[in-house]
Structures are given as C-alpha cells and as structure tokens.
Image 1 (cartoon, rainbow, N blue to C red):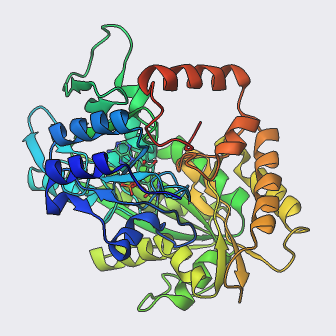
Image 2 (cartoon, helix red, strand yellow):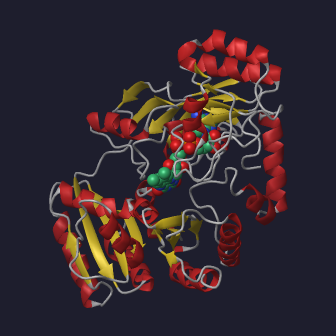
Image 3 (cartoon, protein in one colour):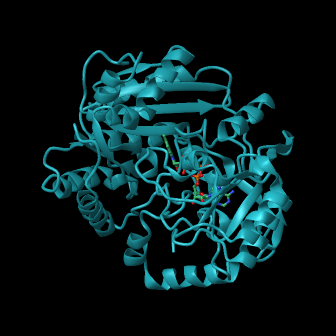
Length: 469
Ligand SMILES: Cc1cc2nc3c(=O)[nH]c(=O)nc-3n(C[C@H](O)[C@H](O)[C@H](O)COP(=O)(O)OP(=O)(O)OC[C@H]3O[C@@H](n4cnc5c(N)ncnc54)[C@H](O)[C@@H]3O)c2cc1C
C-alpha cells in the first residue's frame, strides 16, 4: 500500500524540478524519522518548494489528487507531528528551501522571515542589526521558524519575552483549500475583528502551511549575568524564584531548575563539560538576568544571592565570568537528554502546573511513576519560571522503551497533572503521539470547536491528518 497518484507526481516534477522533489527512499528516510530516532513513518516522496506560489500549487494539486500533506521544518519536533504516519500515503512538504529573510526593520523592531529560516540564523540576523529575537531553545541550530510558530515553541526566555505566540506580528499562510492569506503585517495594535494569525500559531500544520512571518524584535540587554546555583530541594528552587521576583522584578530572563540526577549525568557523560560547582546538590538552578543599563547588574545579583544564601535557600553558587563559562552552564542544561541517552533509553514528557505547585508535582510524579518503573532514574528539569517541567525517565542499559510501559508512565503522569489543573503538553504540542490523550482529556466543547475550525480551514482534510485532532 502507499504511493501517490501518477498525475500528482508528474505535476510536482514539472512544478518543482529535480531540486524540489525527493523520490529516493534512502534520502526520504531523513524526513520520516524523528530527531531522537524513536519514531518513524513512511512517505512516497518529499517536496521542497522554494516559494510561496509553489506551496500554493502543491496544496491545490493535493486537493485535486486527494494526497495528504505533512508540513515539515527542521524535524526537531518531539511529538511526531512533522513526520508522516505509517500508511505510506502522506507526502512531506519541507520548507528547507524557503529560507530567505525578506527584510529587517531595526527601527520598527521587526523582520520578515520565510518559514524555512533556521531559528539560529534569524537570531544572528537580528543580532547583526543590534536587536534580539528572543526565542531560544536547545534545537535552535536546526529548527525552523515555520515549525517554531506551528508548535508555539517556548524555550528558555519565555519568562521575559513570552512564547512564539507573543513574538509573531503577522503571517503568510496557504490554507487547506488552497487560498493564500497574506497577513504579513507589522502592527502592534490591530483589533479589526478576529486575530486570525493566532489560529495558525500552535496548529501543528493542521490548518494551513505557513510560508512567512513578521517577527517581533527587542533591544538586547546591555548587561547579562548568568548564575549556577546548588540547592537542597525543588521546594527551595521555587522559594528562590519567588524571592528573585520580589527582589529583582522582571530582571530574570531564564529561571531553569534541574534535578541533581540530570546534572550529574550530563557532567559525567558529556565531553569537555566541567562541573560549575565543586560539591553535588539535590537540585540546581540556572538563572540568567539582563537589563538595559551599562553597569551594576552583577552587584545587584550578588546582593540578591547573598540574601538568598543567608536565608538558607541556596547552598552554593557561582557566576559565569566569561562567555565560555556561561556556555558550559547552558551545555549542562541543554545536554541532559543527550547525555542520558548514552546510558540507556529515555522517556520524555513536557508538563505544566502553576509555578507554586512545582514541588508538589515532582513528589506526586515520583509516587505515581516509581511503582511502574522501579529501576528508572527520574531526572526532571525545565523552565521553573513558566511552571513547566520535563519529567524524564532513564531506563539504564535498555535499548528502547516497551510501548506499553511508556504508555503506563504517560497515563500515570498525565493523571497527576490533570488532577493538579495542569497541562500535559506545555510547549511541545500534541502531534501524533498525544492525540488520543487530547481527545480523552480535553473539554468536549473545546474539541468540538477545534473540529469546526479544522473543517472550515482544511475542508478536504489534506493537512496533516491524524495530528492533533
Ligand atoms: C534538543 C531539543 C530541544 C528542544 N527544546 C525545546 C524547548 O525548549 N522548547 C520548545 O518549545 N520546544 C523544544 N523542542 C522541540 C522543537 O524544537 C520545537 O517544537 C520546534 O519549534 C520545532 O521546529 P521544527 O522546525 O523542527 O518543526 P518540525 O519538527 O519540522 O514540525 C513541528 C510541527 O510543526 C508543523 N510545521 C512545521 N513547519 C510548518 C509550516 N511551515 N507550516 C505549518 N506547519 C508546520 C509540522 O507539521 C509539525 O506538526 C526541542 C527539541 C529538541 C530536539
């Protein structure tokens, strides 16, 4: 089974030429296997349009020939939304060749990027104009703007500048009926009816294919301080966060909490990573602060830390004295999953609860998961300031997770989160891997509304069927 109608293939070869159509099975595999190689699907071909008009022509041909399409950016998504299912019928539409920055306006604090621009390149382009594009996450060297928008990506700077949703001013989108919506506005205020761009942000390719976006830029902080702190417990980290907000207001741009298990695994397994602190601690906090004044931030941070130490919240700490030291701290934070994967099979999650209840979440997760996987190493970490933790589990020595065991862990953790009024998907989305959970756990009225939107914007059901809804 599988394949595409001959007429569709012919029209795509004609439309896109050899650079835009991949038919070689070996090459296709890179587009049908997930980042961590824990999920794969099948596709008869991959299309690589280079312009918006080509995306529109692809969608129109797909409607004519009833071919389902999976939009794909950098393929770093963690919920299987950007790779096809196993049917062998879905065609991947990669935005990799749509990677132009169409324009940058530093005085208006925005730029227009095509969907296939790599996030790190957008950051670099903003920096070259003395501006900051604040979205930052571990996969920024590979993920692409269209994917960031479609997953409403979060990352490490949400505390100060918000999620992707807060950074998009306008969009250009090809809808499921083949219509092109040119909404590349740069307005800060625009209340002319529904805010349509918000529909496509976080829609995971189910409502339209984003081809370009107007993105908000900010002034980069002129001073930045990065501190690595050792703490006794997650409760102390929450207390420290509250203390930081009370004393320093909005100065923190990142406030990341990491369980000792994950830090020690990263320090032991990653090449060239030195431990920032001599001793070992139950939990660690990586906090980054920035402001627009030219001097004085380090003294303010040291005062705050001294007070926090006097109050017993922090056991030990250090401030990065160079960019290399700062990078080493972030390497530990970002490298935990990679380090843990060297020791066995890793199960990942992405949950959120109110910040004040993060400690309770860790306790309840331990209680719920331990009986299911007594030998697993739990190494939660995440964006404490956003109430978002990745409660991850390592099965030492295992090659992969048994699907039933993984499902049992997922159900147990999601039940805990539901009971706490939280979210079982804080920033990674639903994709294919959490679709049934969404249908089972979300308010039926909301599911009904989502179905109506899907039917209105993708009436032929060709955009990423089987993902999200
Ligand atoms: C090491 C690592 C660290 C990560 N850290 C974070 C983190 O801190 N925060 C966070 O939020 N995420 C994180 N992620 C997840 C991932 O990087 C983000 O979800 C990212 O935004 C996905 O971008 P992408 O281009 O790779 O999208 P893809 O994986 O290619 O696609 C993701 C989804 O978007 C859809 N899509 C892609 N492009 C388009 C388009 N042009 N139009 C319509 N739909 C489209 C796809 O169909 C799919 O449903 C991390 C991933 C890895 C591997």
